[in-house]
Length: 78
Image (cartoon, rainbow, N blue to C red; front, side):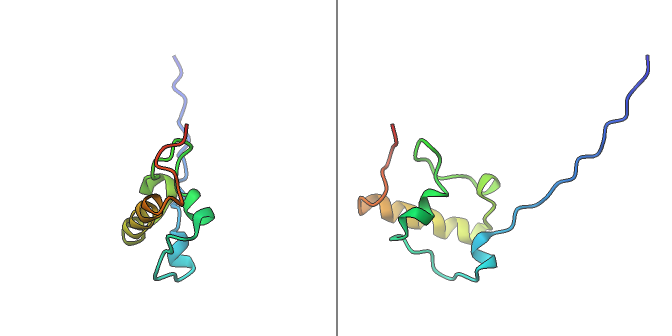
């Protein structure tokens, strides 16, 4: 039996979009921007999937929740 060597996969870390743009505040009224960070079912994407840093992930979650309460974003997509 010959063993094949597994190629090492290169891991590319996603960079935070908000850090790159030097944004301090995430606006809850920017519906199109917030929809990029929600799944097709309306759930908030995880940090691993969206690539945001912890500081901006918390601010993003707060902005999405505020937009949901103001009826700018749906709670659930069906």
